[in-house]
Amino acid sequence: MTRPLRVAIVGAGPAGVYAADILTKSETPVEIDLLDRMPAPYGLIRYGVAPDHPRIKGIVSALHRVLEKPEIRFVGHVDYGVDVKLDDLRHHYDAIIFATGADKDRALGIPGIDLPHSYGAADFVYWYDGYPEAPRDWTLDGEKVAVIGAGNVALDVARVLAKQADDLLSTEIPENVHAGLKDSRVTDVHLFARRGPAQAKFTPLELRELDHQADVEIIVHPEGFELDEASEEAIRTNNQVKTIVKTLQDWALRDPKHDTARRLHLHFLRSPVEVQGTDRVEGFKVEVMELTGDGNVRGTGEYETYPVQQVYRAVGYLSSPLADIPFDHGTGTVPNAGGRVLDLDGEHIPGVYATGWIKRGPVGLIGHTKGDALETINNLLADLPTMPQAEEPANDSILRLLEERGVEYTTWEGWGRLDAHEKALGEAQGRERVKVVPREEMVRISRAE
Image (cartoon, rainbow, N blue to C red; front, side):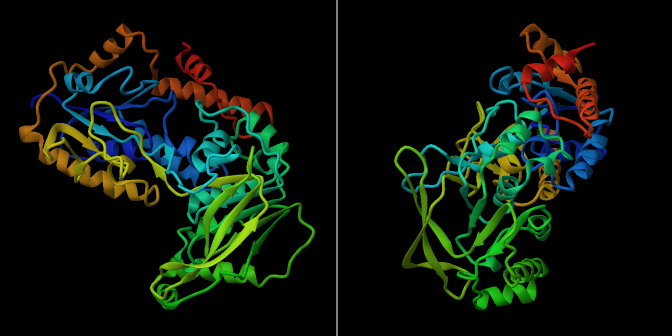
């Protein structure tokens, strides 16, 4: 091939950006377009991580450096499956990599889960992160709230629910989110984990963040705080588990404060059974579990009910199917072999690849997507001798197609304008930045000359 390899990456979050970065470091000359349905880049970092995480700025800075590379072009506000189809991309690019992540909540099949004021964690996260397609208003009219889950997303949801609204003014939360949290009536947040403390999927940093909140008491309930043989072994052999259990033990031994505005309760060995209520959530029923010695649990037949007015389930994310691409609804992934997307017969669709959560499911931390991207890119490069070439590989041909179809796409330069606008909004309020939420406003600012 005498020209650079033309690659489209669908999804401009960490998975897509890491894949682009690895491609630019290969010996193969490349031209990469990062396409995203949002007008702004960064995906999960902008719309899926709690705004008060201290490491976000560092990750954004790293992604920013990659996106500034001359071989990479950001093309935002392009909806794959609507604005462009697979055939369009194959016509203009030699290879296409899908890095669309996981955007929906995994279902939880218990009675009452669909009652009003019972939510998936993703819905709440999208609201407080200012996702353009999320509702602008969120009602927090109940005093007691249940959060189901034992991972970092559950911690994020519980922490934001318990946090004082003004403590988030140091972040980029939109004004409507600050106003909604300011009106919150929440006093008690109960987080329920099905297994024991040594089996929790929290990471130590995220767990410790719970204790860095003004006027919030952390209460670790001793009932269910059990360790079996497998738990003890995990503590001996895994420093992360050791740190998590030690942190929780220290909290459990503290004297109660009695004078905080809000309390965040941690319950272990409690499995969800039923969301109770008639016209809205009124209670949450759990079964008491016990460890079986190998890290697993079984029900005891004993039940507890907690009076709560809202329930948030954080039991995992699922990816959405992609137009013209096979999809495994059981795993929520695109069928693939090492990132090579497979057709219904199990054969590689030439030139089509996947990376990130759409490839392997929503597990692992953001940094884990680097190794995932490396596998996909290595296989893509190995396929170069047999890869079909784009029929129209000119660098600006895809932009001409989008313009012909009336797509108001945004660019990296446009992101610079939106970034500066959000920082100016923040400066006017004595804050670092304020996130713009409406999609049409993001596009208008990004496309302004």
